[in-house]
Image (cartoon, rainbow, N blue to C red; front, side, top):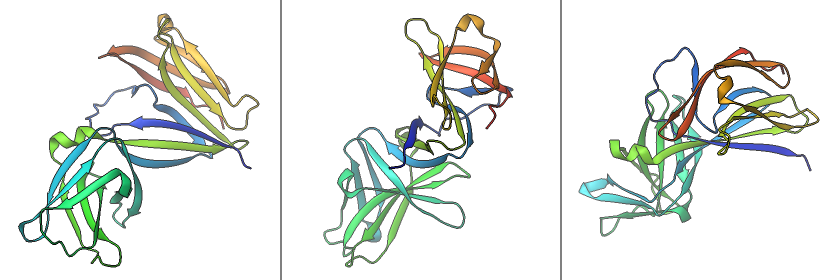
Length: 234
């Protein structure tokens, strides 16, 4: 059986990002990805969440997520607009109408990458359904509950290099970088960087050179400012 190497990172995308000369990274961010790797993105709702959207003839649909839910990308149209669908056992959809006449109902989200906007989606499914769709943009307060999670995979033995900022050690506060080289003898290695050496330049296994300008603690999260002087060779 072919060995598969998998790494996960959760990314919340709806906060504004100011422009810096150095790039910023929070724990679990990948600061370098190169070679023969694959990315698969899902949408994640991490907390119980309920929403209401307008339905036909003055009715409303009620969408209830009882806990963590992973929505899969089931469609991307010609304009790049993405549809993410929830598994039936993770969400409940009901209508205020006495009789909907729309068969079974399913729920999901529509994502517009250009504007980073989201909309709720309810659509009918099954042979009794008509294929109708109803959408409504999320309220500002709902955005905080929605995020993306990216799975990165590479076959062992292929030409893929990944560098992930894994946070800092609780005791020493050293910065931890995890370097994955899919065709190396030692596939996963760690580099520890003392905050006393920051700002500075750091050699990464394989030949890369990373400049770290700062490692600031913001609301309990260690954020690094970095720039690649020389990217890891593939």
